[in-house]
Length: 196
Image (cartoon, rainbow, N blue to C red; front, side, top):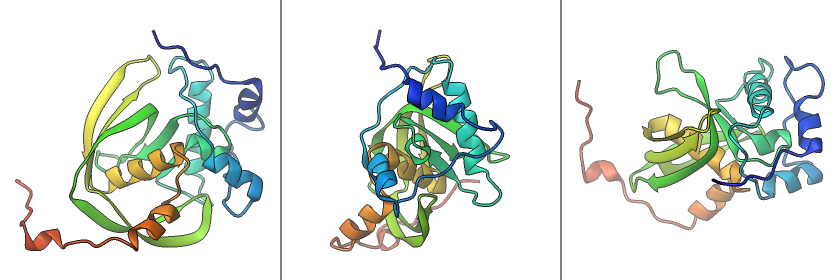
């Protein structure tokens, strides 16, 4: 059985601070101390930890804040260096937010999707990023059950963006690195269609 480093008292205090129905402060890259947290290593956590449910609730309150809503959020963005994120499932009816504990992307498609991205932690910055069109992701739920699924389209983009946060990577890092690469238009190679 895997051993996890328990959630610290400082982490617990942050998660349980203030009005639990209110969003937490989103860390910003423009703040030097925040940037250190956003770039730090993130620890796995016990999926059955009793504080995890409250962490997920606080993250949901934050990402759905009507003043600054998003489509995904990772724990480091609220100051918790743990491997958990929420992503809006635009690929499902009702487009719910779902959580991913100790996630890992185990496969990336070679076909890329080009699209504009922004980030709750980078104020007013948007740029074009290439991401895999489809991914295979593994993760845990609150009972410690392990799941694996293939996700595609914009939902896969959201998950890749949030996974980057868990690895201390920002979307702007990709923008810089991708400027040096060449891409070939896949639509001239294959015609992709959906079966109705």
